[in-house]
Image 1: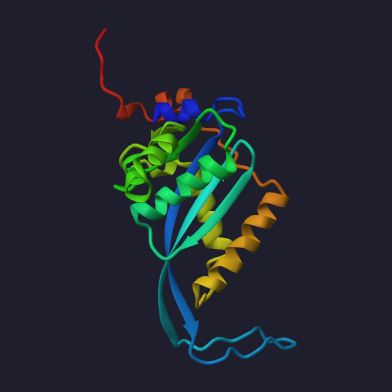
Image 2 (image 1 turned 180 degrees about the vertical axis):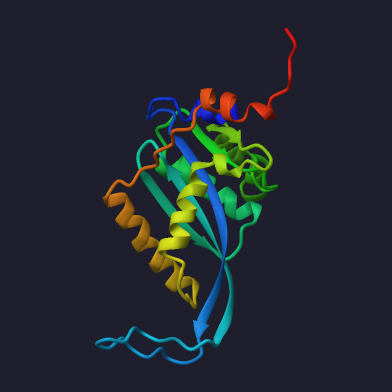
Length: 208
């Protein structure tokens, strides 16, 4: 916990960009009947029936110090899918960086080993060498700022029936483009000093 809290206090360094990543499965649901359109004094009305269209996965990449985010839609969330996200960050987004400082949770695909499932060893090692890993503690995923951004995405964009991966992609692209243009940031105020006071019960009792 303190590792992450100290990390969030670092000033922005373009050579060591801070990148938080989280992911979310999304149930794709389409309409069985066309909704009744909105009319004066009457909101749009939707039938209670729906059709399940499978599941998609969202990877949310958030750079809190730049107020920038990107959401990528994938069919699954395997190690290979995550490795492609890391490749994109290292080779395309931050190719000039010395290190990409990552914050992720403890999902079993989150580690440099995923790169070797997706790429030749030489390329996997080159990507891995540019990554600095920081993990949220068990039961502490709230310490990942990307989770806060995912909650905003779910409330503002995913609170409707979305029937296909293509529609989902269009929706999240519009959402992150709008937030990036407005430079919506994250006001993270919880510090290590706060944690030692408010969460003192979690620390071992040391008799000096």
